[in-house]
Image 1: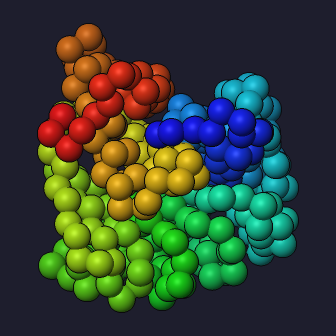
Image 2 (image 1 turned 90 degrees about the vertical axis):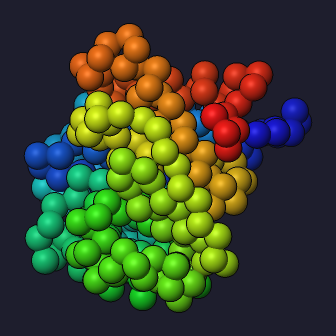
Length: 265
């Protein structure tokens, strides 16, 4: 990724992460750490105030916006939308509770947001495809979340075309589908990537790349390839005993090496 040598703070990407609940603090922080590892300038983390301190301790670069209560609620909508209006892109969904109020609030935020979006986890609901029309969006479901959205796997191309969203279906092989009909399959990785949090890291990495002006389809492909390659490198060192934090630590080297990952890597 090229960068203007005369750019200023914020010119190279502003990412927000909206997520978390009382029992889920790691998910949004993994997304934020992966965005940070992509090289973006500014990262805002909006999560329940239960986790304000751990979020601040996770990275000195995070600008932490604590939200009162146990999870994302209706009373937070205006605060979240005001922050998102200043962002290049937001990751929404990691770690958010699955209560009816939480889900409705998330869908309202998606519908009203003015920045680009990467949607994962609780943000992936039956109405999500409808709410993202007209927005620059990447959806990152696994097969169960795709079914919850009411989208059969065989209809991925149609869903992407109708919604205008790039869809990355996660699995042993990832499948990335563009609204214009392009499809890319990414093989690689290993079963160590089933460790909790790798999907959150994937979402954050996609957001970081888009914030740095990469097109969503290409960003989804590169992020998938990077996470899978990180898993392969870590398996050689640790077997299956590696963590999502380990995966994230590999991202800068894989992205910014003199010979970055290609489609054939």
